[in-house]
Length: 101
Image 1 (cartoon, rainbow, N blue to C red):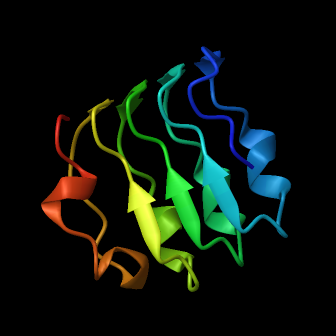
Image 2: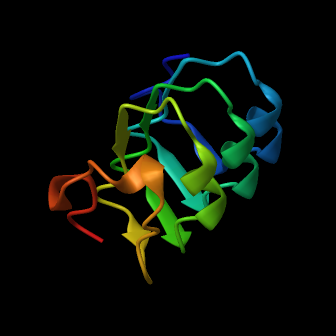
Image 3: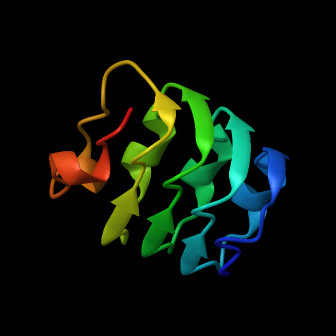
């Protein structure tokens, strides 16, 4: 699902975490605010998540540590804060995935 650069705004709906067959999610370059939904930890087979260049705030949910197939995640250029989770989904990410927070 590619919804990048569509000028979408408001919080990211928790219901997106129910799309358990989702492989690709790009919500970058929008106007999303609020937290990253904890339900994203239920995206069992997701391989790609790009939430960069929004105005997301709060912590990166520890529930994302459970993602076993993810190969790419980008949280850069938001208003996120706090500790970066350290589980397997985050093992291969570099500082580039978190810059601008």
